[in-house]
Length: 402
Ligand SMILES: C[S@@+](CC[C@H](N)C(=O)[O-])C[C@H]1O[C@@H](n2cnc3c(N)ncnc32)[C@H](O)[C@@H]1O
Image (cartoon, rainbow, N blue to C red; front, side, top):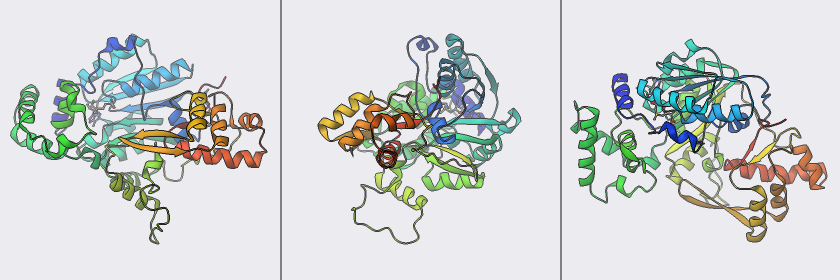
């Protein structure tokens, strides 16, 4: 099976990237964002003067690798990164991107992430869009767990089934019809059959998936993949448990709650766990096509305290002052996640606190600036912080602390 994967990614490295575009832009995302890693793995309080040892497992054409290395380089933080991927042509693109940016401290390996423990112990392992492409995802989780340093963390993205509705029947049909073809013939054949698939096929009605419209590599990766095992929340929890890991959190944990999905007075049946709730939210939303989260070894998990005076909050996305002005005018803030629009109710007092976030001041400084007594500040701040962290809109990190 691995031979098919190598053949696939050697023919159509994914995602398709032109190294020259590194002159123009930095691709950012989750996982692979050092501030997000700090927030979820190190309680937002990592000592960034110590080198971060990173494994980018299944690094592909280099998006996560480049983001981690560039952000740490810009922040003048020490790091060592090992990149590993099965595909040589994909690695070549990642190497060119790194070369153009002049990034140092990266060791490129062509091989399998199943051998990860042979390459050392890592404070952070980045595995984005890979584990669902292994013949046995469990073997991948197990291998990566063994390569974690004490108190290290795994950042993962795996495909989720419900937001990808319609993908799997097409993958199965294309696989049967194109058996034995070269990747190039399979692509041409797949595209010609796809045109004949009726408009009311589940896939063509799914507005959440679009990779097939994003060039040959996107079409191949989405519809002609030979090994694609999407994971429900329950599958992920099971894989993690077996590997001796526990979920720290998903990057947008509010999407895994039933709030807003059931009537406010609905009482959950006795005996329901957080995991049951997350699994139900996944089913009721039906719009998740990936799960992005962080995990650590069982017993090593860190709980972030939003009222710790040393924590430095960052508002992700818009300028916090503009967001605060908008909230004061409109009484709340809209967010769009997985195509779903959600309105966040935020009080005028909370909006003012949000407007004070500047990515430099820590929570202790914000409390003093707010003019509120510590207890009053802590109550208002925790409520705001929990709300925004729930949507991945606030991250705590001292990455840029001087
Ligand atoms: C969908 S791409 C994701 C690339 C990258 N992580 C990203 O998010 O852009 C999957 C990558 O995983 C690699 N891969 C698949 N199985 C692997 C394995 N067992 N060991 C290492 N790499 C693997 C493939 O060669 C491919 O480059």
